[in-house]
Image (cartoon, rainbow, N blue to C red):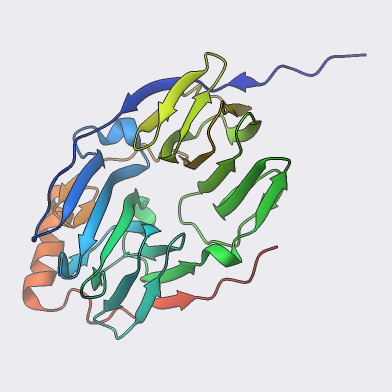
Length: 297
């Protein structure tokens, strides 16, 4: 009888806890959780910001060459774009927007309110940079869920414990919301080649075989074995409940050139995006589509 190989355990490689700084308008506060200084480290993730966003914080602006994932921690976010698409997100909801060849859009909290949000940018591979724009509204109540004992895992993208989300990805990305009761533990399988991190929404959790403590507001990058085998992430709580997000994705290993709201593979592609925007042809031929999401379990 042969024994099964032991799983590769993911530990904590780095914990970041950036300061909150003033935003673009009165009452707006921001934290840059993932910056643009080292895209090879965060690949395929480009940027991530935490916002306390009042009405009017982000006026109409363009994007090209990437996807944005907006998750609402608390409050409401209204969305509309130049093609006439409208939508809103409530607490616990997310929107996956594929900018592709070009989108002009605006996100805002309703007047008189503040929306507490996370927005993450995900790189698109070179072959999909100019794909048609698309929206996926990922309502919290519709997410497939795995639950066992004191652990509840809502699957926004990818799969966990044999349950898959219907979310469409250009780059395979896992997004899980994990809730744990006090004095509980769970494990999550991740592809060995995936780059992965946690963001703690509430409480503190002990991560990996070394039981490194990660607390609310911190982003924790996991160790990267860069091997094809599946790996295991273990999480344990002590005397407080915990709520956290898990993100994982396979690195693209492609050149990354930032140009404000555009992310392409070369400086010339950035210049072309700027020319298209200046000429008013940026998104005129793009017909963004909304993808309906079936109800989960």
